Amino acid sequence: MLAHIGAAIPDPIINGHWHSGRGKLDKISYVGHYLPKGILVRYRDHRVPDVFHVYKEWEGSSEYLPSDEYRQRKAQADTRAKAAAEDAALAAAATLDKLEGIWASSPKADLEHPYTDSKCIIPIGAKQAAELHEIQPGQYIWQGDLLVPVYGHTGALQGIQQITAQGRKFARGSFKNGLLWIGGDLTTGEVAGRLYITEGWATGIAVHMRTRNPVVVAFSTGNLLATGQWARGRHPSAMLIFAADNDLGSFITVQGQQVENPGRYYAEQAALAVDAAVVTPPLGKKGDWCDWHMAQIRPPPEIDPTLTWKSPNRNAPGRAESVLFDSPKQESL
Image (tube, rainbow, N blue to C red; front, side):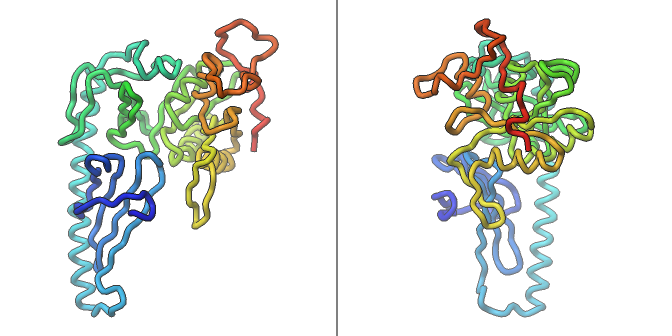
């Protein structure tokens, strides 16, 4: 673990369930499995989403393991894995049941919630926790936290993204292949038939506010492809555009090679698969479309004022349109 994230989990629990570190390691999650010749641990740092690492520790890796002993150890490992999978399924069902109750009982989000206010957006589609909820032992949704629904491809709730007033985000439930539709149908917006896909919820709202076109939120770079496939399947003739995060200076490892800018990389891979375009914010530095949206409203000193991108035909202050989104082919694949 030290090689990848600069930290090691002391006394890890190896039982096939995901666990979180404590104290300064609270952003590290891991799951450990017993294998015939040792243990295998998958882990990740939540500050680097969608990037998983593997740690292995073998017993006597240079020694030959007799076939009888191997079969015995494998049977034990398979039994543990089956029990862990059954426990995980029961725990996931219980968590989802609790989340459904929390979602049903929570009111709409305050229009002046500290998080959305700091992002210059309105909390479209979100609710707000009216009281403290314990999701699992030691895991809480606090009163006032934003609750963003994560739906499966069938339209059923499968998770909730919890966002605190300070902007800390927690995944509750399952986010795999999850999505959220923001806005109206494909007849709305600056250009009819155009559908945007974003990684984050705040980014999705910013894009919708600027264009009035519908947006589908994927919630992670790992979900961009599945979201694009869902959108293309539902709307074969739509103009799909990935409004990608511009992760300049961030690197991921893909098939042993370092790749810069995971936000753009995964968006481009998804766009190639579903015949879509990709646009990234013209900030000149790392950022997403919500950062660009904020810069138009209250540009900080370090933002070049020539990057405010005003349409010559739309000079009214506060107008929620942008010439950038009228020209998606500038970044098309």
